[in-house]
Length: 142
Length: 284
Image (cartoon, rainbow over the protein chains, first blue to last red):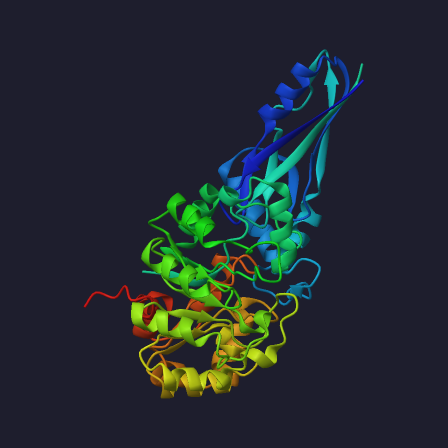
């Protein structure tokens, strides 16, 4: 059996780490699937799904390290009007940070619950805020 | 007070219940992949950017299209959704037989704050006879005009109709009419400078990031193409912050202006003081 759920979040900052662990757990418990896998996947190219320990100091280190690797005000090619959009492509740092963070995470489903370590939380990470965003939770199993 | 004098209202949710109308607007204005923007979310964006008010510019080419891109009735609906933040202009197709009545109604009954005209889209030069009665109405009512000037991203917009120097006759013939040459008239920014310095009621806005990022482009334009003191000493009271949202985000355009090494009084004027005077909102 496969179940797909789409969720929406609204980012409130240019860089925003939004905890969505409970949404993943709830989706698994309501799916009726007892054994399998759950994937959490972003629908965007300037956001990430990250798994990490939900501590303010870790969050600050993640933000600072991404900014050091991909400075907001660096020189980028993707910074011009896109004729197919009619809008400006001023979000190269978001695209590159997204690549570093990855677009999804996966956990086992065992006995109807998402199986993860005690320090593991799931974040929807906004890298090009503020925006209205969507991500998917797909549960596969029996 | 921070005022963004150049934004387009076509994506707001309160006028886009019908998906077909929304798609018409996107194609007509040339923002092909943008989504609907809820007014509630726009408030979040403005709060985050610390922008107090936004001037919204509807456009009407209804003699060649099925309807205005955003009508004046729809403009009043948008303004009503956030009246403390939105300043709504009117749009009138000058080729309409009832153009003068539409504009008088926009000012007298719908309480709209000015007129937006893109003459490149209309294929009209600024001295076209069909425009003159509209200028008279605006001048008499004390309402400003936002003229598109220079390079337009919209479809079917030859720049020759919007070259800044062509507006000199308007400034001469309607000396009390306040008007803005949007986008600094890019690429004819030097002509725009002359108009700003010579004519007391001519303004310009900064919605001119035609390439690069706002930080890089504004730095190039105001400190390399121009000497920064030209802006600071010669036309500091005529340039207004404008983002061209939704083609550019309010916050990123504003960051580009704030990053310029301007004197404090000049920064305050560019970010909002000049707009208050242009809009007729300045306290006497």
